[in-house]
Image (cartoon, rainbow, N blue to C red; front, top):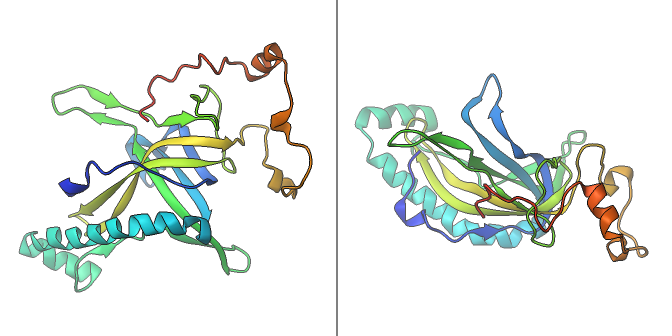
Length: 240
């Protein structure tokens, strides 16, 4: 993968709160038998309504367009035979522009849902140039900004924000061009995990009434139920 130097130190961007799909945030994803990931990665898909996503898209569009411009320039610098092969494969321009996000459709009606999906990924490790290996994992925080307890799984349906680094890319072998969304950290706003379901999965919508966050829980009981001390939770390995 080739990236333009001017984009490497872009400020981290934070998304609005959305729903997580297929999150792999606490364990490494090594892909599938068909599409293996040798060193593995952490990843998550974030679903936002078109309205929620509008400010994010507006912020990323100039970077996305610039990535395409840079990709075309890098394509033009390839050897003639490589360019000819890619032009035959991808068309006259020779590049294959990947979308910034995916529009979601209802599986039954095949009609647009009005939701958009953004994909974020972090490489879990690799070989160092001078030997040995490096590894990293995403930072994970709760709604209060405290480090998330280790050993707690995060399932699809959880909601939260994603902090990421925009990274333009051009892949000479395929001619693929786009703006990668490099996962850095997540903030969990509401959690769905083993044995847990979200309220909307039962048909419950937000209503006026009891706010459980205002209830007082004895400290000892809270610690026993959680199995951790949130104040002293180990956050080693978090990069955010």
